[in-house]
Image 1 (cartoon, helix red, strand yellow):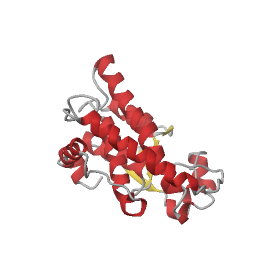
Image 2 (cartoon, one colour):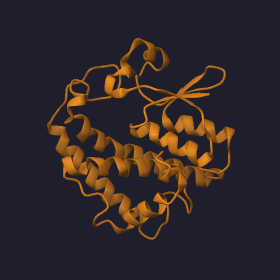
Image 3 (cartoon, one colour):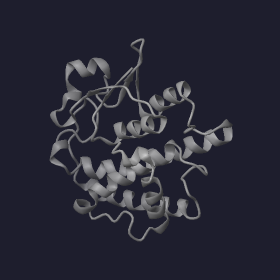
Length: 215
């Protein structure tokens, strides 16, 4: 198997952490987003949506989307369990993972992609060119602040986001929080300051080898 990815992008990092938690390694093909290699005809043949990551299986099947990739790997390598055991746990893990994907990452991306020059005329991922809308930057900031407050409330009295143990939902949240931290200075965001439960969770997951290893 091989993974088409870009080490500095949030979604590939989610898969990197998942692989590290599983103790797995595989061939990686870097698609340099700063050079817009994802828009090349060669990569569009891999993923017409021009996004990373993509997992190519041993029989040549290609799987995009982080959760689909990780779910496939979980089925092949069920331990340690990162999606929950049984229907109740799996539902909670998928629910909270989806909440982070839909309530957290879009606001951050909205602020980032509508301001940074690298995304000029490409404010949304994919092959279609969309102009930046500067008025969306402030809305993205507000969405990010609301999301971080929500996560702080959710984590109050809890060690992990979805279950009593580390799951893929924590991976997605960790990547979102780190994305917010990298944006903090330029976008007037406070991330952990004033959010004690979120900060405690962040410190807790920072001790994991999959995080310490720079995934």
